[in-house]
Amino acid sequence: MSGSTTFGDICLHFTDVVSSSYSSGMAVQILHINEDHSFDLNESQLEAILLDDRVKDKPVVVVSVAGAYRQGKSFLLSFLLRYLRNNCRSDWLDDPRIKLDGFEWSPGSKPHTTGILVWNEALLYNRR
Image (tube, rainbow, N blue to C red; front, side, top):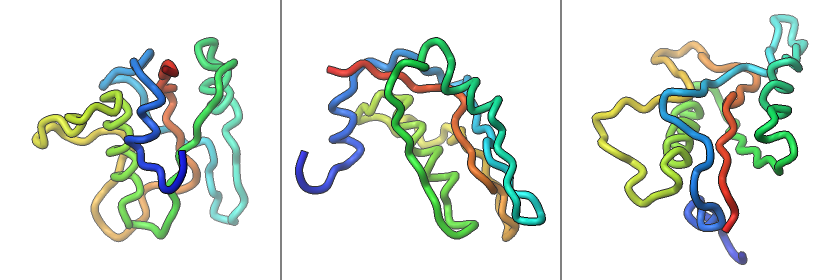
């Protein structure tokens, strides 16, 4: 591909969601930031995800969203998750009355999501 790439362009290379369901999976924290600004890595959680028999020998794509607190990162990740769960179909938005689930968020000025979170269920796709 040349030039800019969109999620639609990327998903043209993948078909048929192999493993995904709307009610399973959740965001898990793999890196915790302590009050003294040190870090704790949850290696066991990361290994459980990446060394699962269904995915351990497959390439991994990492999608990262970073930015200032309270700017919609969790909302954006939940939207992307809905798109991928719908196998990149053009009607991926579904019914707008359906609650957007995935990465938790809360109203207010206090940061809700800190550290590094990952989705604990791999979304597998077959290449064309």
